[in-house]
Amino acid sequence: MESDRVPVTQVTLGETSVSVAWPCAATPFACWAPYAVTRTATSAAGCVHVAVGSLTECPSPTRLATGRELALHQRHTGLLTCKGDTAHVLNTALGVHYHVENASPQRIHVCAANTELHRLDVLQLVRGVLLAGEIRRGLAPVHGAVISFGDYGVLLLGSKGAGKTTFALSAISRNRDCCLVTNDKGLLSTASRSMAGLPYAVAIPPGILSHLPKLRQSPERWAGGKLLVWPSEVGSRLMADVRQCVPLREVWACQLDLKAGSVRLATCESGDVRRAALSAARSFEHTLSPQWLYDLLGWTIRRPWLGELLEANWYTVSGNPWGRWMPAPSSLGA
Image 1 (tube, rainbow, N blue to C red):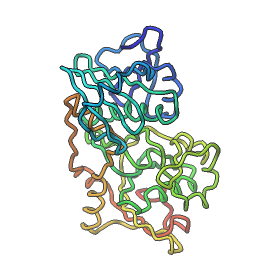
Image 2 (cartoon, helix red, strand yellow):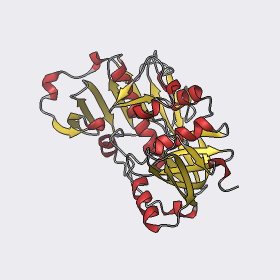
Image 3 (cartoon, rainbow, N blue to C red):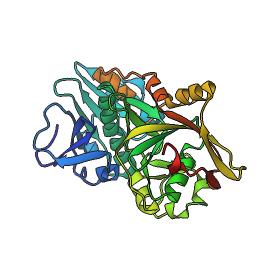
């Protein structure tokens, strides 16, 4: 269904590539820097093909009325109709249509309007395909923030509300050598013992904005009561680098306490704390990922145990990130 008049962009994350035929493809993917690499493609052998067209190409509503209900990404629902190796899915919440061809090569044709909501939906679909490709080749998805000091990385773990984002942004804003790798979701390579970032927006709670007002710039995008800012924009606003991948050396188990006057960094001796942090690390939220698409394409996405993280140096970071750090984070492991 791809038109010869539509430019084709090859989007690559790690070693996984997706070929995207989309009239505005060059602009939306720019926000994924530095994680994804894009280039103009004349051919894309071995890639999943995604083509974006207008809503005028979608089937009639009468045909869709017989479809069965399907759970989609973003907790949306859809209607599914199948014929041979081809499936048609209507996102009833957004009005976006997806044609999925489970052939060789595998193709996805999206019928969408040129609106922000529909463009974001296409971005989520392409990102989900890239993420699945990296997981299927052996990388492990991790729920956690990653920062770096010089040439080594620090993984911040904890359950929701433990302060991963707050500790990470505080450290970045206070230390010139501290770089952002990823805010909430990353990929662990057990072979190289490294952490790579993923192109997800940084979700910033309102409490952080009073300490880092420079993160607020127009126009703003909010979801779930948090300000969404792309990592590259966070880096530019805090005058910090954003890195795609770093060697992992330390794990910090986060314990946020805004009533405290300082932050305490200490060696983590508690096995219970480590097990709780590992459990949180495995709770990689997949609501933004199109599991329904993985099922239609016959892909199996497994979640590993992440026991390799136990080989890193473990610390607890507790207290108020906006107070005094004792000791300074860059002095650990020196």
